[in-house]
Length: 354
Image (cartoon, rainbow, N blue to C red; front, side, top):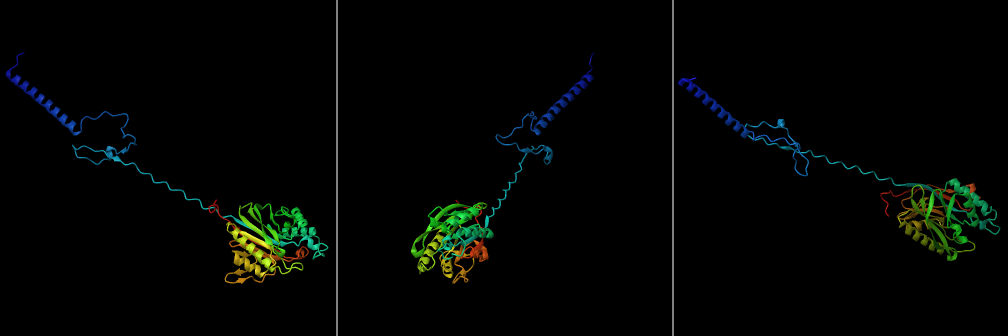
């Protein structure tokens, strides 16, 4: 077929327009790649993260503010929320201090030798019989710790059989040393330390007097107990005051030494003195009498009737002080039975030291 010049010109124009369109499309495609930052990378199966750190949460594109066309978009990591510090548990409240309540007595039982045929009270029952009555009095008053005086061998044996008490020194020393034994209920106390101190007795002759540290089985509270019998003026032994004074000084020194251990101290005994002994003891050591009285700027013993005493170191509490002069006491001994309730507030576990 033969093309005319007019047809050839038309075909040439169509081909030219097509080529121009292809070139424009190519240029537009290249510009689009530059605006978007180049070809999109191939997705990775494992997201990249800095070595040794936890990947941060990335803000999705939908949450980003709108950007102007043609500007690169910067993605900002959202900070990981910080955990609030855990509150420390409140400390446990301190354990309460242990409290010990018990009954203490001072009891001169009148020695068995005094009611024998040659004794000063031959009309009274024998020592063994009266010891049974003494056991009844211990039970009647609910006494937990007793300082005995004139507790001679037969009487001590009877009390061992008829009470639930242990004794110091009991029969552990010389025969005559039983007389001033300290007794305590074995179901409530156990002896931790047992000791003696010597005081001048009749005409200055030394006699062993006991003191013992007891521990309460329920509370663990400990206390010292000392028991004395100072010499009296008698038909056989006259003018014993200077020996009583010397004995009192020994007893005051012992009280101070025991108080220095930080443990409560109790003193019981037949001191054969009233006001004088109270004033000497309470001025010489930080002790108080179960029956009362003061010694602060002047001694006021409050007119004691008995020569039998119960003292405790400052900090203990006495209550219900009683001097039993009942009929049963009259047929048992020639002294009242002196009784008092006691309260000791011990140290809490937090206060204890080794």
